[in-house]
Every structure is written in C-alpha cells, then in structure tokens.
Image (cartoon, rainbow, N blue to C red; front, side, top):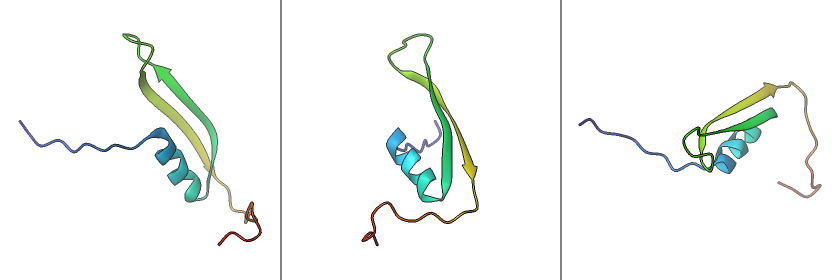
Length: 62
C-alpha cells in the first residue's frame, strides 16, 4: 500500500483560512451522505475576491 497523508482540518479551520485571505464567503453547503445523513459526503464553498479595504471590527485590533 502507498502512503496516505491525513489532515485533521475542521470546517472552521477552512472557513477561517479563506476569510483570512480576503475572500468573502458567499455560500457554504454541507451535502449529507446518502448512506448516513448524520455525516457529510462533501462540502461546497463559493467565495469571491473583492478588491476593497475593510476597516477592522475592533478599533484596537492589531
């Protein structure tokens, strides 16, 4: 068997990384597994890059 690389990213990790790169999340959908709807089969994410400067939410943020 070949080697397999496993990552333990959560959906929150992925969404935070996307937002941190200046992308605006337009849609994030979780598609349930047909065999067990308690677990997702996959996710769909749509994000846009918008060229505009936003002010921080908190004035004293670094």
